[in-house]
Image 1 (cartoon, rainbow, N blue to C red):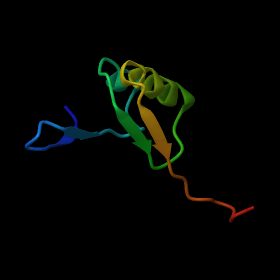
Image 2 (cartoon, rainbow, N blue to C red; image 1 turned 60 degrees about the vertical axis):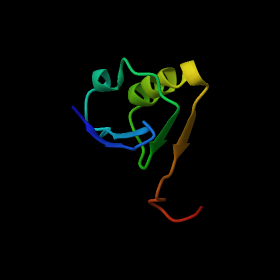
Image 3 (cartoon, helix red, strand yellow; image 1 turned 180 degrees about the horizontal axis):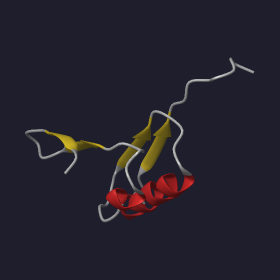
Image 4 (cartoon, rainbow, N blue to C red; image 1 turned 45 degrees about the vertical axis):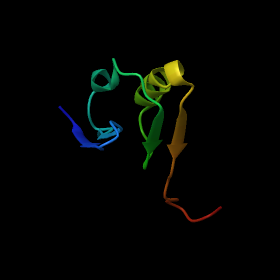
Length: 69
């Protein structure tokens, strides 16, 4: 089970942690995904596969550790 918001129109926003195993990202087709930190390549690749059914988008936001170089 993972945290989620369910809206009156049936839309669902789910939240998962990149600290979880890759297997928890399997088995669901997604329209959109967002990463707010760097994640393991195997998790990123798994999420990209979940986006294929809907030609979904992935957004990534990262905080620069060593400034804006």
